[in-house]
Amino acid sequence: MVDSVTSEEAATAGAGAATAVLTAPLSLDGGLAAELQPANLVQRVLSLFGNVRPGSDLSHLQLPATFNLPKSQLQLYGEGVYCIGEDYLRRCANGKDSLERFAAVVGWSISTTRPPIFGLAPYNPVLGETHHVSSGSLHVLLEQVSHRPPVSALHATDDSCDVELVWCQNPVPKFHGTSVEATVEGKRHVKLLKFSENYDIDCPNLLIRLLPSPSVEWSGTVSIVCKDSGLEAQVCYYRSHTFLGLSGDPRCVKGKIFHSASQETICEIHGHWDRTVSLKDAQTGNVSVLYDARSAIADLKTPVVRNQEGLSPSESAVVWSEVSDAILTKDWERSREAKRRVEDTARRLDKERSDKGEVWIPKHFSLSQDKHGHWEYWPLQKSVPPAPIIVPP
Image (cartoon, rainbow, N blue to C red; front, side):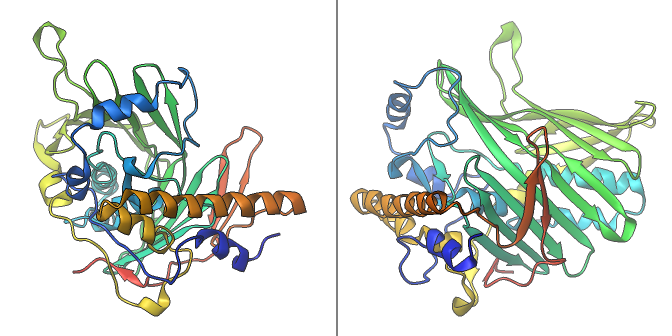
């Protein structure tokens, strides 16, 4: 067993004092990430894969700091939940019937899709790293519960609308010669407690095209299932094609809501996840707006520290504070040195645990693997407490 002091030592390597550096979330206009892209980014990205074989797993590829967003992957996962302009999560708990609530969950799942940025990636979280943020009455807590493979767990609860989110995600990026595809393994669970409804949701894949034209987009089919109501949905993220087969819009979505037992289609889903997505009643033909990206993910607010003393040494914004500060000021030498300190210390502590035969124990989650290699996980606390970092109202 490894106690929490050791876990915080690993997470705070190189962070110094508990000072958090928080940066703007990915939003509809790209925001900070778009400003950080250098002019020669495409050539530099292509050079990274010169000696990588097709089919290689890139989960543990260590990127130079010049390719990093100034934030951890844990923060990106969290931002998809707590950084939003319109509260799509509350709609899920306020639906008047099971179909309305199910459609709201579909809309919420689309709201977690944020514009990816070509050539820039977040930091790989170190083992034991955490991220804890509140937005109004919603409290979100994440922890990096495994390093090999890299697994991130999330637990979120809302004080006022009886919603709970639990998930455990493992991104598996692979190089395919002219592209990189990141498959996100694991399901997201949305629980509407007062209705005793549980929803299981997949994640879309992230596809990075290197040739012939560099781009990054979401792809694949997301399945959403509620066994309690007998409803199911499939939402496909895809690139449209124009006349003569030329590539068109990469941000299209289409799908349907249907009865699991009969497979009868109830509603059709169609639109663009960066604009609007419509819901069409299969019987009446009535069309309504399921999701509006402008209201959901435009002009998002940057989280701020409300309680400096309450910051955990393992907080992502603390762990990577010096690296992020150096990237923001484009001090690349300092960013490289600071990043190396964090990663080297995490590797050293991992070796020390291995030499002693110690097993890592997460602080906020209990987890195990079944015989098929799938992760099973449970939050140790019933609810998430208010966080020292908040999203301004």
